[in-house]
Length: 130
Image 1 (cartoon, rainbow, N blue to C red):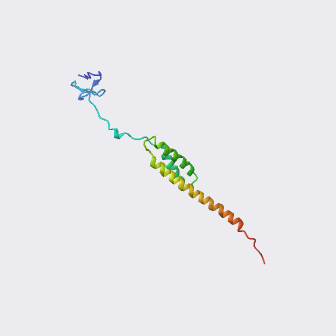
Image 2: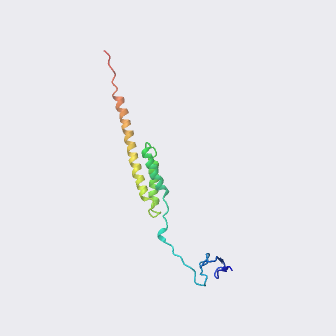
Image 3: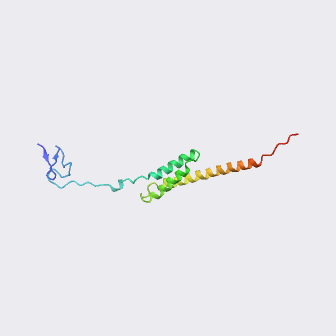
């Protein structure tokens, strides 16, 4: 014979000591209480910090063409980390540092290339034939 919960009216399967719907004990006791571990709640992820870090890292190995984009995403991720309880702060800082290093290297290469072309144009000496 099927049993029904005295609290909510749901059918209780044979062998169960409590209602699966509301937790009331079969013998008329009080509802079963459960505890929730608050420490298990995950922090939200910071997509801008992750994207900024990945873009700056990839750009470092791909001629530095996307360093400015990685820097922008990382700065947005760092600002957003304050509202996300610090989520992604480390990745954002790492992305900013890597992007800045890549931009500095890119600027140095352009400066050396520009100076080399200037010196090359001044050093062209006409050859003298005897």
